[in-house]
Length: 81
Length: 133
Image (cartoon, rainbow over all chains, first blue to last red; front, side, top):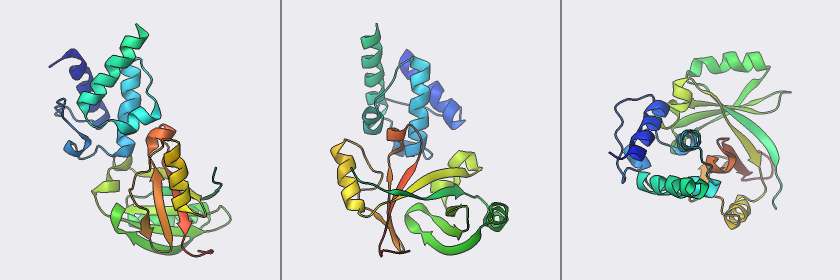
């Protein structure tokens, strides 16, 4: 598992309070029962803190799966460095 | 830009038998009740000098998990004259609503702004079907 996916998985486990969560690049909100719109925002706010990035609201609302989240984080972190 | 007014605040109460207790604490009287299938919840509106509080009692998993099952402040609701107009204005600003179509909740139509656009505050828009609720 890539470092980034590992870190994202840690965030999900923390937010959902569930150490059994496993993520893949094609994981979507439909794959996790409690992943609704409000939880989605909570996840993204935590991701912002962990990776030191800031997402636009439209970027947060438009993400379709973990792969797109990884791509977005990579874009944001590349811009910063 | 559309204008609206604060209509109510929504509070999730996991146990239905606690609703009257909370209403008493806030000096409210229980009023209209409506089961809203889309959200699997019993919605109980109140009246009083405090303003309108909607107590929401989850009857299914969609809202039962809110705040790890403890309930609490859930949303603010803004009353608007034309929900369709509001939807179009928000979409024109690249803002999304949670439902494709407004949800019929008895005497009102409702929809929610995606909380991504408020960074976590749930905002409901309501349109009374008739001029007075």
